[in-house]
Image (cartoon, rainbow, N blue to C red):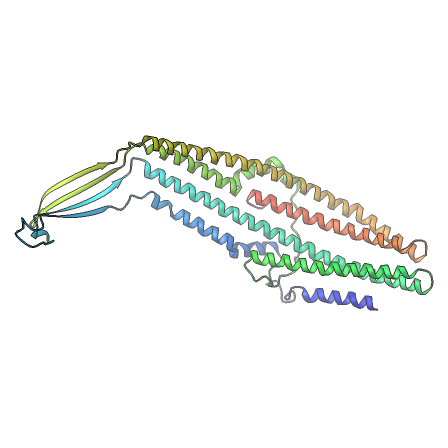
Length: 423
């Protein structure tokens, strides 16, 4: 009776600690993965910050291609009129007044290059923002799969706890009839205690996963979440072709996209460093006023003399080195992505094989073994230790199936993160 009460109490605790609002309906997030991803896209602060950075980078393009503001200068000549008057700044009271409007003009093509560099840098930041979303989406998918795994593991543990309670009753009946030792009843109680401890650990882990998921959704850590309704279907084998996926990674991976933009930016920066060999200009127009009328006009052209060639050659070598570094980074990243893809595809294949083996062979055999062990124990042909071992085999088979499903979902999320999109 005490064991049954414990099991009932634990079951009630699970119900009470489940997300409040399962009766209220589907408004509570957590049941559906697409709804979670939509919430994360709208609310995740890390992704929001990267979107704003991308927006800021895009706004730098126009100023990069704009001329500098013109300058205006005014000069008062002979402000005392040969010491015949006090100092004055009125144009008609001085010897003459010069008005100069100056405009700095870079060498031909420099402004366009600067604007193109800014555009490529904006593309790189945009790729970084897309990579941030891919990372957040993968975390949401993994958290959803973990919640599903933990929920069903708790459910399985409760079922086995109830089964252990029935086995304990059988052991007590046999002990009362002198057909078994007291040790059998004690072993049954120890098994129940171990499952109760596991339930407590699973509940703690579930709360931790919920807190991580809520953080991704920008919700309070203890906010309620609905029970996961199910896992995504795994793609068919043809979709998981390594060569096809690698081609998609080269086209759509956000990190590769950002690195390619950085390569183009470095190429343009190298071209700009070569144009720095040529001078920049300043053009000025100066009307001169005497008394109340403009008496002459002047035009001025100024240019800097690029004498510091050693400095410019160093800048050119720096630009070339930055280009080489960008190309090397992209090559290293492509190699790493290929390695990660191969690893994750192999893990998905292994997880699918494990799940099939557990569902089609291991679990049915374990259940048959348990039924035979239970009948043998009731007939006095097997000891209680054999019965408990058969029960553990059933549990291990079911847990192996759940773990294989979790592993496949986690690896699928990693593959989609590499692609930058869903399969």
